[in-house]
Amino acid sequence: MASEGPGGYGMNRGHRGATWLSATALGIVASLISPAGAAAEGGGQNLFPCSSSSIRAGALLPELVPNQQHLADDHIVWRDPQTGQFLLAFSAGIKNLGAGTLNVVGYRDRVSGDAPNPNTMPAYQRVFHSNGSCDELQIGTMSYHDIHHHYHLDGVMKYELLDSRLRTVKPNSKAAFCLADIAVVDASLPGFPNAPAYNGCDPNARSSYVNMGTSVGWEDVYDKALVGQNFDVTDLMNRPQAQYFLRQTADDAGIIVEQNDANNTTGVWVTLGVGVPYSVGGPRPGV
Image (tube, rainbow, N blue to C red; front, side, top):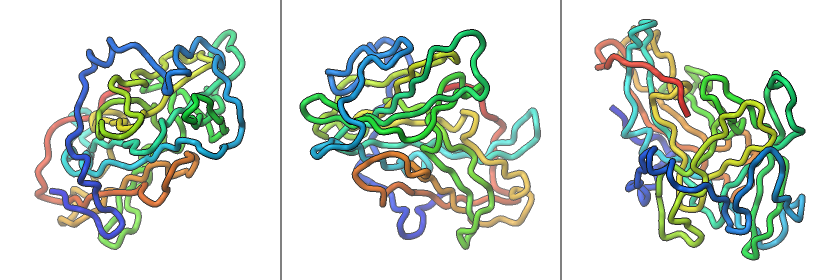
């Protein structure tokens, strides 16, 4: 059972009714880049260079807000049939409620032969203006994930499991994501695109150009069944029942330029220990 977290971790209740899109629907929508002037990028090079390497006045910034409702409604204790481990698995999402799209690109020299090891490239955030121009800032690194089979933006998320005194019990289980438009959270926001602008993750380990993002009014969601969306709580399930705080922080590394950094953390209380119900299950590879 879960409950709201302590002060500072309250849920934004105005965005509970997310509209979920099936994988089939996402697959048939043509890939776009927002705004319209940045469409049809890709192919292993920077085809749409921005006009500025610093943020100019009037930039339309994104606003990242973690979705507490996913943590509250979609967490579960599994016992993995293969390992016998108890896993606290949870879904999580990041909403973009800002004035502008969150667009991140990575590019490097073309790869000849095998993919490099480590397989990384510099990451750049593109901040757009109302006239279609953009500013581009280097913000970190994209890394190819060998289990998820696509590129992730490093440092965009942090999960923690804390005890009743908010001390760390389990370390961060995941810190990188492939950003995409998965669910509608606020279609009333100016700049909201009716179709997902970012609907896939680059599976090519040898890519020299990667483009990802989350549009205004959309959110990126990672399901509890995916690798990295859980904590091993085997030891805690063999102790007397106690309350723990599952905390999610968007942009924990502080790399994203956005409207407000003060609302990037949320969480829920969960109960773990002897006698807590559990199901049989485990993670699967995937996006």
